[in-house]
Image 1 (spheres, helix red, strand yellow):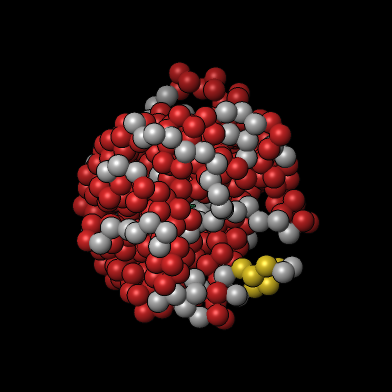
Image 2 (image 1 turned 45 degrees about the vertical axis):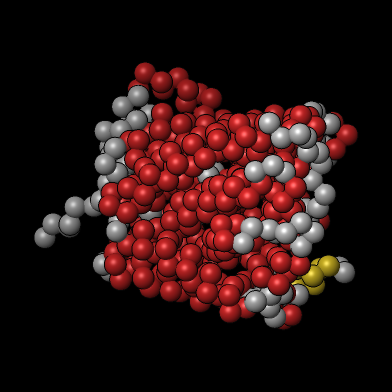
Length: 454
Ligand code: TRP
């Protein structure tokens, strides 16, 4: 009996655009510029770049290599590389984390669609954006419907598979995203307060850096690069053996980092200085309010929310694909059934998050830490978007060190590019020491101080 041919990306460009699509998301476009602003501007950018290349890149390569070597997502990959070992829990952790992140990410992604339509049909009113946001997020039925719609769109792309769904849509949406961004940057540079904003963005401020800065930078790097839960492993599993993984992974990292930095070139000229407050919802309040005050603001708003929706969609696709491919590969369920059932489960898991932004006080004030309340959405983001990703990345590195062995990972990473093998002398100490040490420090810090990454 021969197994049906497993799907593959049509071209390495298709893989790069899909993987970059996964990486480029809400994390880049809102969270990154804002964190830079809060954590020392230019210094933080430098620190972030160091972390991306010294810690993110090695993990990216290990994930892609484990995926391509085994042609499986996290559960199957671990099973294939270490049959019967207890390590398989790492695979399940990845699948669960994917569903959990998608469940709340889908809520915020739903907001981008609503704001897109709102900016097209009604525009925003100065001074009223905070009230609008509160009214909007506390409308439980609307929140659940938007979650349903966004997960529905995500499901319908994943439904059509790798070539026909994910690769196809990434090839359209990613160039569109780039064009939109470039257009927005050029326009935002002409705004009256652009130079003040950019100064705030890039000017180094050593006084604002502390131990938290490092933690923020590491957490942001993993989240932004979609690492720690097998998303890149799954995408890597569809990469042909004949392609150059080393190059492709590098391009994905550059792409993600460039888009994050570019996002600040839009946000800060609009803000024109330091961002006032700090929370994910703020993009919907502060930025929309500023849009009402600048020339061409309504059109700008439309393109900005279109940009956010696209970035969010290519990310949610990758989150769903991890769990869907698990059912397809390990339980031999058809892709169509797998995607629809995972989509539906994620929607159900997401309902408490959808109701946690004001709709019900139980989910809105879900956990009390000190005198602060954490919503269900924030709690999930903390548990899965921060801790679980860091843990997943750490365990993956330990798995490679103790079980799969760096030597074997190396062969897969440098396949078709043996001339670059000398780079493994840099990669090896990073994998063996730098990455595990850095993640242990961060995890230890979070556990002992109770501080969150966001
Ligand atoms: N990287 C995406 C962002 O920046 C979010 C994301 C998509 C993600 N897939 C992931 C994060 C997998 C962690 C793991 O918004």
